[in-house]
Length: 291
View 1 (tube, rainbow, N blue to C red):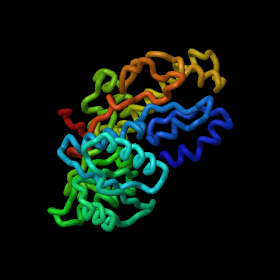
View 2 (cartoon, helix red, strand yellow):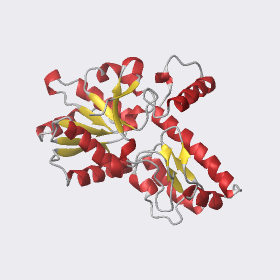
View 3 (cartoon, rainbow, N blue to C red):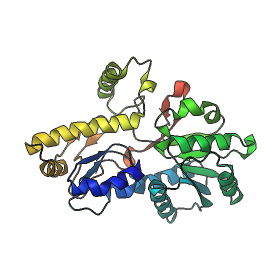
View 4 (tube, rainbow, N blue to C red):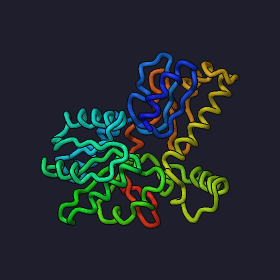
């Protein structure tokens, strides 16, 4: 998670430890001010995600988003990104409501956003907060249930298994970067799927891959690390860090990286990799068709 990554940055750079990020999306995790920078990420960057989520709401005809955000560094990163995106948008922010770790009810926050005119909720939460948010929304009368667009943090762990009853009552979509049901390179996805099931247990379908985006990102990161070690010709961390910046092109599971990283860019993905998804049958994360 972003708050954990942020807390680790000082130690990472003091000890020249290479930090490979397949999940935490907070912009300052990578844009951290350290030189040289030892953090490299194949994941979402909130600076880009904020605009994407606002745009996703607009494409569906919503014009008054209300933000429901986890009160931590990740939530603040998204607040900044979405407010910046709204400066160049025809949409108007209805309001911002915050929740703390361990919150058991969010009815008051949702009521406040709806009273301020929100026609859709944009949620930034991990699975725990996400469960509380969807249960609070599902508990409202059907006519007062607002659609929810979420950052991908909810999709870690057993979010759907624990929240199925509530999720099925609301209109919930969320950000993803990769899908094993619609992969850009089907042969690579099939190879990964077979190896994953062999390693972690029998699979009935691709829905059994836990946190598919994190799994795919981590897979590509380890291959990029291997290539960088080979390029450096050593496991010296500073040398490998330099090699990561110049490793060049790599055809991975998620995309064709060309190049993966540069000296000035330690984020490998951008908005062209983003897509919206929802839960389908058997808790499968199903990508939505682009319009």
